[in-house]
Image (cartoon, rainbow, N blue to C red; front, side, top):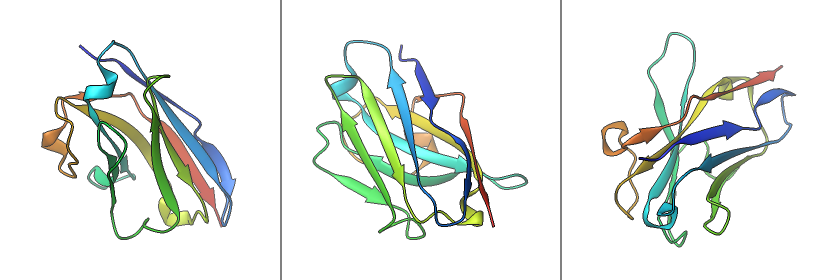
Length: 124
């Protein structure tokens, strides 16, 4: 069992930056690929970014590529999402997820564990 706790959300002006963190419990964090998803009001939860278990591979949805960066520190059991050049359309609840597999995945049903989410609000 893995428990995930996100932090770092908040309110930021358009063009600003935030860094989200996701702390994971358990001693096998380095064997899990991780992902970030987001859900805006009235919309389905959508994929944002994923990182392989080793951290050597990453993949992003097109709308955030180039201004979001996913990273992980396996010694600290933590995955991060650095978000730069934020836009109002990035406003959503952001969720961290873990999967029992070391490889990248962008589909929600490939993930086995989810955090409770952290709100990100970008004002115009």
